[in-house]
Amino acid sequence: MSYETVIGLEAHVELKTQSKLWCGCATTFGAAPNSLTCPVCLGLPGSLPVLNKKAVELAVIAGLALNCAIATCCQFDRKQYFYPDLPKGYQISQFYQPLGRNGWMEVAFPAGRHRIGITEIHLEEEAGRTYHFASEQSQPAYSLLDYNRSGLPLLEIVTAPEVRSPEEARKLMEALKTLLEDLEITDGKMEEGSFRCDANLSVHRPGEALGKRVELKNLNSFRALEAALAFEARRQEGLLTKGKPLAREEARTWNETKGNTVFMRYKEQAADYRYFPDPDLPPLTIEEQWVGNLRACLPELPETRRQRYLGTYGLPAEDASLLSKSKPGATFFEAVLRFYPGEARTVSNWILGDLARLMKEAKSGFNELRFSPKDLAALLTFVDQNLISGKIAKIVLAVMFQTGKQPAAIIQD
Image 1: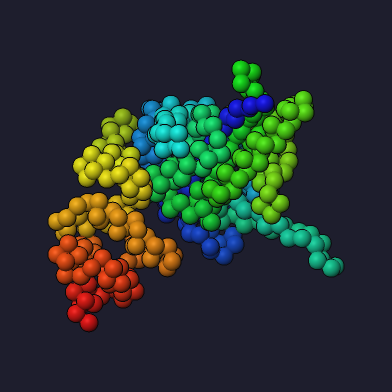
Image 2: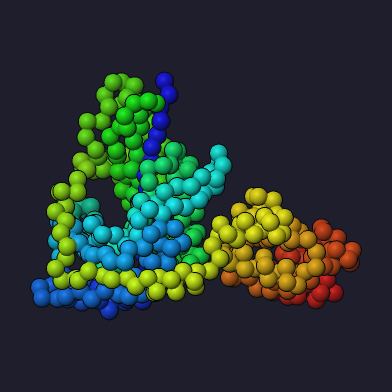
């Protein structure tokens, strides 16, 4: 029996600001616990939030890049829930009037390029972090709280339920992360929590109503996202086959060790959070001229770059996709072309082939290269002039990578 899977994604993106969303505390990662706090981000009585303009600017840029309609007026709301890592007892978010709505993003899936809707984007604050410790001998289990992350600026990006497989979900999140890093909206360090994802999934038989949703929480790697969705799809298909569909919507988490999803709680509805406008924060007016200026300053986006590489340089589709999705890689590629008189495809072959292999082995990137684009152009020119063979050029490239010496000097040696 066949089933259809429907997936919607929520990306939680830590914005690249120097201070938090409502106060002047630093956003530095790895500081001593509770050293980057103040009465505002600790939720102490009488403290008042003041909005970080840079966070709004980065959120607007993200919305423009995702083709969203930017609100001219939006507000902040209190989302009530009670966890120890939420010192105020509520989270400041946007529910009734988000910053942006009705956007879209085009992504390359195995079945071809598709446009996925962006339902909304909104600003909210991060919670603190809880560390759990198991009991040991006479020491009972306990938890510790670190509020350094409390109040960090987050941008939540909610996609439409238009993703149809775990693989598509992974590719969409990879493309989104690349876009936001390209725009320097976030550093994208998933291991530090700067980019993470929740996923909503339901399964139904073709022609029937959608099934109950399961939300998979805090997936902090693309591999975990794809694996958790694949397991959950199989689990729900099994329940439908047995005639026992989900009766209620659930929130579950991913157990990496056991390779399965684990029940956390039944899903809350919007009414459970008792949203209401935050009385300490006035409505936010966003001037159209300011948005227009930000739009005019947008750099070339990865999709536009990909199209240019296909049209201007005649690169194969896969080469164009790989080079365009990395800003450092694209910058290096185009810099080589300024010095190299040969074919662009030759440059892409060397960058995506031997150079990519060397960087992968060294676990480094384009920003750590010891040689310049001009040096690679010189090496490729030597090959074109039959001064050295392609086999020798590979050896020279390896020495360039290790030492930073110019190719002519290496050849002379």
